[in-house]
Amino acid sequence: MGQYRFEIGGLTIFLLSLLKLRSFIIKRRKENAAIPSLVSTTLERLTKQAILHQENKSIDRWISIGQLRDDVLRNEHSIDRRESVWRKVRIVIETNSNVRSSQKEDRNGEVSRVWEWIGALESAY
Image (cartoon, rainbow, N blue to C red; front, side):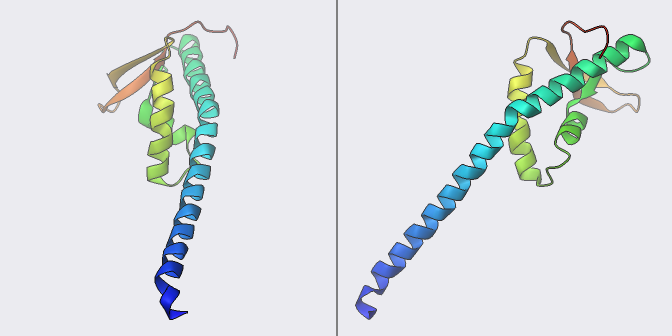
């Protein structure tokens, strides 16, 4: 048995590496499957904000990206995972021609990156 300890150790490390890789792939697939739903939720929030602005001009037409991220991903508590998911959502949103990205100053004087819905609006949401 002693003569095979390196082979057994190597095989054990190999199997553990395979399990870790499998876990990583499953996690990544689950994360990627959630992206379309998160994009849809984000676009709905931007549309709703534009409608609220149309009804009441004192409400801003835009939403801070950080605030939107925290709202849409409120159930994700891991900062690293939240950033990983949000990076993918942001790529899709910022390539949408109905969304304008810019920097705005809010009522508190804080400058932040924002998204604004510039597409067509439904009359009632």
